[in-house]
Length: 104
Image 1 (tube, helix red, strand yellow):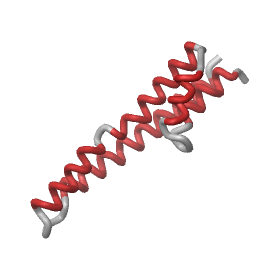
Image 2 (tube, one colour):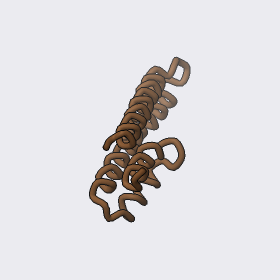
Image 3 (spheres, helix red, strand yellow):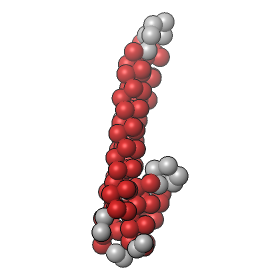
């Protein structure tokens, strides 16, 4: 198996063991254009779930201060959305990692 394929697929699979650190290191260290492209794509996909995190923090603060005795609906909705985003990103990374390994 080619080193290019292994590194590229590991960038996608690193969502399970190294987060965005491994694709960032591969992106900086590699000179191969194809591996660099896959490292960039996987790095961006690993960072997508971080985008709604400030919204979750705001929702928690809002529900805590404005409605202390009721169900924190805004926070629950944000948590559900964040979980769905994580599931989609994980599935997408698995599919892309397998496609890279199977590609000729």
